[in-house]
Image 1 (cartoon, rainbow, N blue to C red):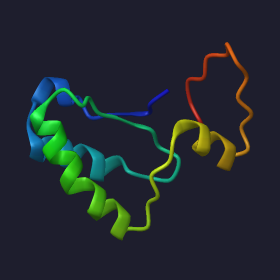
Image 2: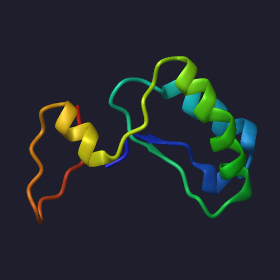
Image 3: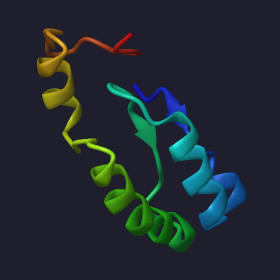
Image 4: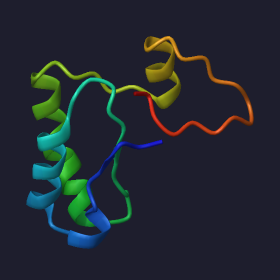
Length: 82
């Protein structure tokens, strides 16, 4: 379902993760980050206030789809909101 892959598992570098997110953050994007890496957690803590200051809202995938007028059906696989 994501359309921005930070490749945090590959770099394990906070600054690279932050850069990847900021370079691709736009309305409706689903950003893939793994919560098992300390570098990702550090990037997340830095990103949330920056993105919020830019007017981004953080929502669940269900909330995003509802806002975009996309109906979700049980058992259906969704790959992109675009």
